[in-house]
Length: 126
Image (cartoon, rainbow, N blue to C red):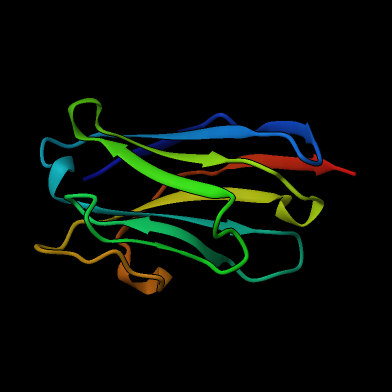
């Protein structure tokens, strides 16, 4: 069983920054691929960013490329999402997810992920 706890969300003005954290339980966190997804009211959950276990493979949605950075600290069992130049359209509930399969890749598909956090709200005002 893996537990994921997100933090760092909040209310920020357009152009501002936030850093989300996702703390994971489990002794083999260093072997997990991790992803960030978001869901706005009335919309489907969408991919934001993903990172494989070694941080060699990293992917971003086109909508956040150049503004968001995903990273991980395996010693702290934590994955981060640094969000800069935030826009009102970034407003959503942000979830982190873990793919615990052996050799899991950094996938854009939410169906590849086995465990999900409860989410942290990000609201960007114009």
